[in-house]
Length: 481
Image: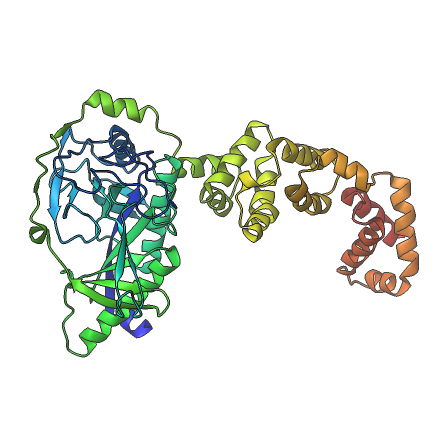
């Protein structure tokens, strides 16, 4: 692959379909919550029955405008809906209501670490249903498919990027940052596994230095960040090998198979004219006033990049701030801690360390743990006052995450408060020094690193409770006698 990357450059554009977090579908009143029994969330509108008319869900429009503002897009004063003609076995009416030449959002960009990725457009549309394919031993001795129309009519916002990405890692970062934005503004839960956010990747390659784009292939069925990276890397090699052998890449839609790690041809890639777009006759063009846009803009929450900068101003490193921002629940929890006046850096160290490790192992969010903001604040206060050491705090936090026991009560019950009495610590220091004459001689002969050995022995003797500052002072004095 490295040889190919020395010769060819990737050109990547992404189409991200985000399911909007509305209670009902985009043109009908039934719900669109994930996990219901097949075909129980349907209606005459969803089923395309004769004589029914779509009615636009205003909340979908509000969410689309909010998203456009967060993506630095232009919100035109007029947009319209179109019929996209295609053979849809999982959309009973045989066409999809979408937007074509007058979308609700135009232009914009998403910042990744090294550049801005342009947004071409974002438009509203309805989702199709889901086909469930059975094996070869079907009802009549052959394979067959079943259709679940629960998803049909679910509101989607399709966000189309410019072909500005040049590596699989840039594509991954773009989707991660876009997902963060959508989650922070509350329009999509970003759950790739449940299909509420999906990415189709348009990939082409060209010789390094060439300006013209190569022929692209669209990769579908990508439902995780890892799969996105793997699919792009595989497709790059596939296209490079075709060119190296003197062949031509054809424009087509391909499916990603996560098990085999390969893509396979699905169908020839359609262009816009193949869909025979025309204005949706049952929906009037939508007029969007400046007042409407300003009203939504006034409700814009803090965006991920803004939160990242605020955390850095609070003394966090770029890495620690990013870890928190990329886990929205953890970031919101951290904000509540900051409101209590805790030390931002100390709190961040615990959240990105012991807390994050526990949550990952238990596969839960911070909101599902038993570590309340008030109790965590107590623990940090005990640490700040010197009542407990940092090591003791680390040991306690996992237990509190599991049990929710009060930090102060737990310290008292276990007798974990720091020993700060100089006479008590001195007696232990003298005992350890007296019991290790060889190490004392070696230390005095210049082996300064043995100081850590003595600290470790004293901490072991005190079960980690000795005040570090007092311990170091008394130990140094004792060893220099």
